Image (cartoon, rainbow, N blue to C red; front, side, top):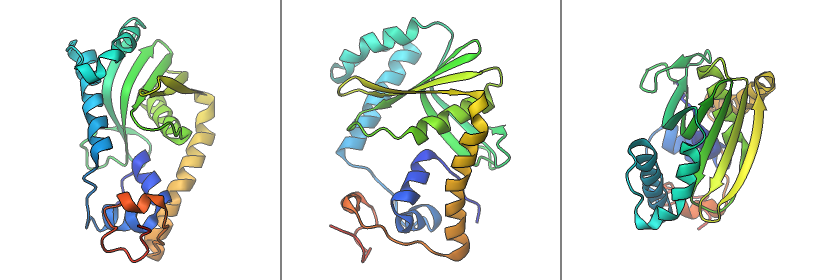
Length: 217
């Protein structure tokens, strides 16, 4: 079986291999999302429309107007909801290509000569995971070969807190080694058909909870 990857898929596996099996390998269930995720999609869309076509922000998001203006004033080339993909040789490919192996969506990407700025909107509680920023940076280094440095940030929209990491092209060999080692665990599970459940507080949100004997509800 051919696997494809993303940050969210990797986190799903690490949180619970059994859910990964049912949702991504067997594709027996789908995550329809709850109220919080629906809200997050709505905010993302309003920011996308504001930055792409200068559509006025709706009332629930209008306090982010200064943030949008700051992005516009940065100069450089601005991409919004940029879809990027690599094949399993770590070569850029199109999002819809059958050889797409690692996919990422960059909420905001600004290219400033040999530097890049990535911003990822977060509408939930502040729980930064730098792995996501590392994957984003690795994508940018592959898709924009002139970029030497990436500044990647989570923007926590409820509180306007920011978590930032800076990566250089010289870091990428170690970054790829870390990521590929984690992805290899998924292939090991596939080869050994070993998908242990990891019961946790996340069980009550899991689409497998209705039939999983290990679910902690």
